[in-house]
Length: 245
Image (cartoon, rainbow, N blue to C red; front, top):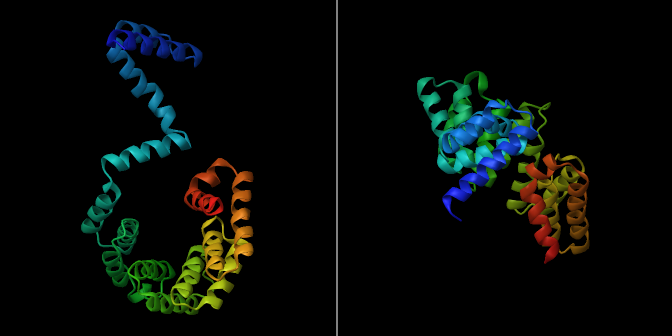
């Protein structure tokens, strides 16, 4: 398609959008008189702010930012930590390191945080347990989580509970893991725990029961809103693959 024709089509589309959305009519003149500059200005000043204000828009912009500068948040956290080595900045940096699967560095930061007043801080203990799990130090993870609950009996964290169930399975304590997954399946706010529960049932040869858990995951996804399906998409997709096998 010739560039002139494409430019004209874009102008027409933008003018229609301006009229339909009740934008300032001055934009029509700018888009028509200055085809390129006017169109770019309209998109940047009028469309992008609206787009960024929606959940899908924010997700798209975040995806683009991650493609352009995938280490943006990690670099920012590292810079803040270099400026001020506070426990808050250490926690933020350690979390970014976990997301990048840089478990050794994350573990070191969490260990440095677990001193003095924060010696048994559940947030840091859980963070360290995540790092140790990533490193495959399963016995250390179980010990950490057991100590976390002993020192913080009122601490409630579904993700920490899920990590505990997964480490029990990794340590081949199958029956204990099965019990924890059963509990998680009844209250965990998402599909991940149920997915791991079903996979363990499969491994134990309890195929029919596993199938019911997988089906329950998809049934909940169908009756839940788009936000639920968006944030738990990974586990919903994996479940759908299991049911297609």
